[in-house]
Amino acid sequence: MIDTNRITGAAKELGGKVQGAAGDLTGSRQDSVEGRLREAGGRAENLYGQAKDAVHDAAEHVADTARDLGGKVRDAVGNLAGSDDVADRARRAQGAAEDHYVRAERAVRRVADEAYDEAEDAYERGGHYLRRGTREVSHQVAEYPLASLLIAGAVGFGLGLLVNASRD
Image 1: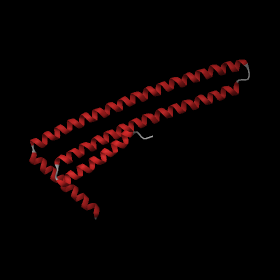
Image 2: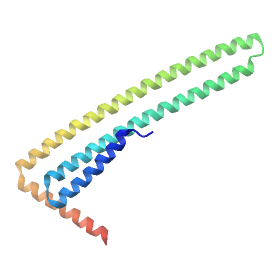
Image 3: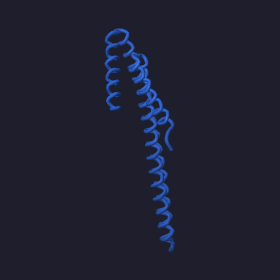
Image 4: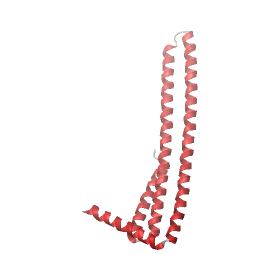
């Protein structure tokens, strides 16, 4: 199942691209910058969702493999359980297999939790960098309004050329 962060992140990323392009075309520096920031935030949220999905899939794969291995050991033990000595050894082997399964499942859950925490920290750091970048861009635009206007115009002109070139 796809994580909701992937869906909302992709939607925010697309919305940011549209807002940024519209800001560039209309000459609205604020819309352009907000759109780029929304796009970056959406991309970060999408990546966070992808990381959560990857951890979940890996945990399920390891758990399935451990369950399959446990089943094979149980079947092998069941086939050997003819004599008392063999049955005793088979029970011990089955117990050891179940113990390994439980330890492997705990390890997978621990690794999945650690990966989830790391992805969550990366998402928060991305938000922090995004806010810091927003402040820097706002500061630069306020300090150099003419240069900012020229850059926005050049970007808008470039996008206009790209849009017209793709129609031909």
